[in-house]
Every structure is written in C-alpha cells, then in structure tokens.
Length: 425
Ligand code: AMP
Ligand code: GLY
Image 1 (tube, helix red, strand yellow):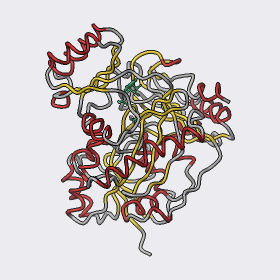
Image 2: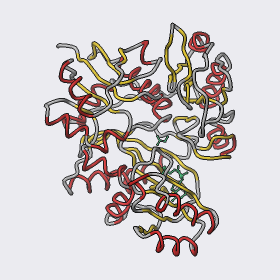
Image 3: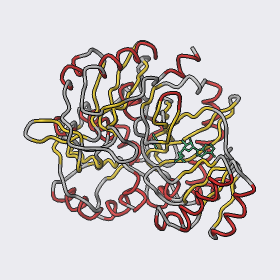
C-alpha cells in the first residue's frame, strides 16, 4: 500500500506529541507541520506562513497530503474540515456545526440541557446591565465569554465586585471582541477536575485514558489560570465507577444528540469535568486534544493513531480496538518567567540532549524555535517533559530527573505535578 503524507496543524506541545505519535505509524511516509516548532523540526518538515484555512488547503492539495490533523480549536471552529471536504481532502476533526460545542459555550449549555447532561445551573445574558444586576446578587459565580478567547474567557468571581468587573471586562470593554457579545453566568462547582477525551466517528467512540491537567500557575493550585502547567494519566479520581457515569451520562448522550440533530461529531471530543462524591459534571467540551493532556496520554497509547483517525473519518470505529500501556505518565511544563502574562523570548535552552537520554523520558517542545543550530525559547509554555513509569510515583520521579537537566534563563515549573494522584493511592 502506498504510504501516506500527513499534515499536522499547530505549534504547541500537543502538536509535537501528535507528530511524534503519528511518526510511529507504519502507514506514514512523511509529515509536515504548519508551523510546528523546534521539536517537530527534528521529526517532520516545518512549513511556516500558512496562516489561513485556504493557505492550508492549497498546501495540502499541492503536496498531495493524504490526512490533515488539526491541533488547535480555532481552525476547527472556523470550519476547516468543511472546507477541506469540499476539496476532497481528508481532515481529521469535527465539522463547523459540531465544533460549535467548543466554539459557543452558550450553544453547548443550551443544547445539552435538553438532554439532561449533568452540568452547573446557568443563565445567559446579552445585556451588560441585566448581567450586572444578576451577578451582583449571585456571587460566587463563574462568568464566561460565549466564544473562543484563547483559554482566557473564564472568570471565577468569588465576590460581587469581582463578578461586576468580569461582566465589564467581557461585555463592555470587549476584551475578547465578539466572543463576549453573550455571556454565560454559571454556578461555581466544587470538587476535583479531570479530563476525559474520546475519539468519535460520529456514532461510536474510543475513549483515551483519563488524565488531569494542572491549570494554575503555582504549586498547590495557587495563582492565575494558565493553558496548563502539567498533567498526568491515568487520573485516579476517574475510578471505574466514575468512568461508567461519564460514559453513560455525558459522552454517550452527547454523541447521540449531536448525531440525531445533524451535527455528527467526528474527531476528538474532550470533556472537562468536575467530580464530587463520585458524580461527574460537565464544565466544558472541547473539540480537540487537550494541551498538556496529549503529552501525558499519547505516550501510553500503544495502537496506531493514524489508523484510529482514519477509522473515525470513515465511520468504522466499532471494529477498532485500542491498546494501552499499564504504565503511568507524568508531564511537567517548563515555562518562561512572567508567563501567563508577558514573558521574555529568545533565551537559549540547554540540556535537551541530556534530558532525552533519561530512560522513559521524552521532551516535547512547545514555544521553541531553531536559529543557527541553537534552540531558543519563543513562547510562554516552552517545553513539556513527559515520563512513563510503572506507577505515578515512578513517572513523577523520572520526569523531574529529566527536568533538572534542562535550563534556560528564568525557566520555572511546578514542583507538585501528580501530587494529587499520589494522595489517592
Ligand atoms: P474552561 O475554559 O471552561 O475550561 O474553564 C477554565 C477553568 O475555570 C476550569 O478548568 C475550571 O477550573 C474553572 N471553571 C469553569 N467553569 C466552572 C464552574 N462552573 N465551576 C467551577 N469552576 C469552573
Ligand atoms: N489543558 C486544557 C485544554 O487543553 O483546554
């Protein structure tokens, strides 16, 4: 059989991990990454300056790409899959009318409410005055911009003042532009968060292993939210019993409801969950892999991911069997001083080779670039060090052993990734 050419879209740690996993497939001959980073550069060919869906489709057509894999949500929400399909190009992910589960938080809540998916109570506002009146009386409250906001459109307001300020930031000052025309005000859930991700062909699905992100910047979940400072898989909070509830009450009814409403969800469905007393509630759906969850989940995945993606596209997942390693995986994110606010770039990174030599450890790049044979920082989240181990404790140890080999000016990282999982053992 002729081997495939694959295009991976994105530049983060998730995309390096996806590229690394795709590279292991015997079905694949060549991988391009648009734009990729210094990590993908060593296993694929990076292609800069493909900035629009049209640029990407033109590239895919010209280079006879057999499969395009989209890392980040923005292109999916914009409708890249629909555009590629019209040109007879295979693109893995949901179409626009399904990616809306992530693209509009208001749509997601209003649509799923009809199907009794467990989630927080919520109210939708399009008038800032009405929203202000409501939040003043109902804090603590979680306030969310309806549309995409690069992971920054959610404000957990503990006091009425914080809540009023959040409404002003989103609706009056329009910090997230049109994404803030409507807002969602929802009940603040308590409990522990976990991520549950499945690959779907529209009707059937294959679950990935459970995982847990660490969203806050500092140890012990202190400080502002980030894109994610580390992850581990599996997440012990997702016990067999909890997993069954997630599947029965959240994943299955959502995939069925989408199908029955002509919004067939093909691709990666990511459920962000809050779990309390063994009851999961849906915080949000995303239409793509998590970052850094991908870096902790994919090293444990022992099947061919390209075969899995093709089965999703072709609609024959029911025959697919995924193999998983019993090992645990921990991923530590190395960030640049100042992140998640302003941070410096162009710092020289050393020790990558030494870290890569640690058995069972893999370094996935995120905000990195190559210049004159040197690897420099180019983003806030710079690197992800993932390590497999017989159990969580071993994987944590190995991950931090590898982390200690790496250095760049003002590098920092959380020292407690995986700690919550240890407490439960
Ligand atoms: P999201 O972008 O929707 O994942 O939200 C970012 C973070 O805000 C989540 O990971 C939670 O920590 C928090 N969050 C969002 N919605 C709620 C909620 N209803 N209750 C408590 N925390 C929430
Ligand atoms: N790790 C959170 C996310 O990918 O949305």
